[in-house]
Length: 177
Image (cartoon, rainbow, N blue to C red; front, side):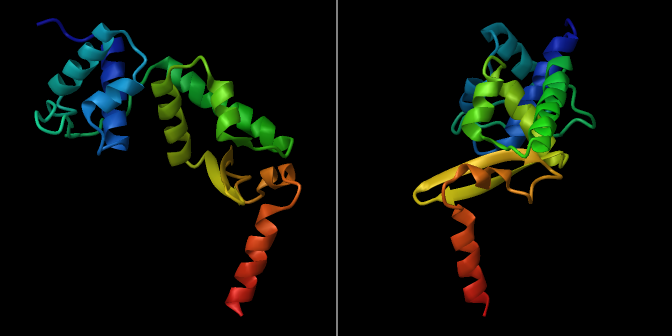
């Protein structure tokens, strides 16, 4: 049998990573995240099975089980470059005391395959190079992305006419007494 190419192995690692991050999702759900040609998707799944990374899908649930995580993930240069680009961009935003909300980050990353952005973001979060925080403004909930070093600065508070965290912190202080 022909050995899988480097690209197929990289895609097999992507499938395995997504199955690791989303263990309750079926393979069909994971496939929806992959913006690849059908031949690449099928090859990556078969390679992940052949490499002993995941099981065949369960016929009843459609889920795959992760059998082992590679010692070193091999995602290819696209994700490595995207990883570094996101960090570079968020470092510059932090220097300007700005954090990006999910919508803005999504717009900045538009054009990149969804699976690559998910993997790059999850890696950066796991490596503690970036962080997220949530601000609630009445009924609205916003998630912001920033560098790990700037995570406690909450630069996005400046976007709101009334500081949404001032009341929450005041209530917390009263409750502590």
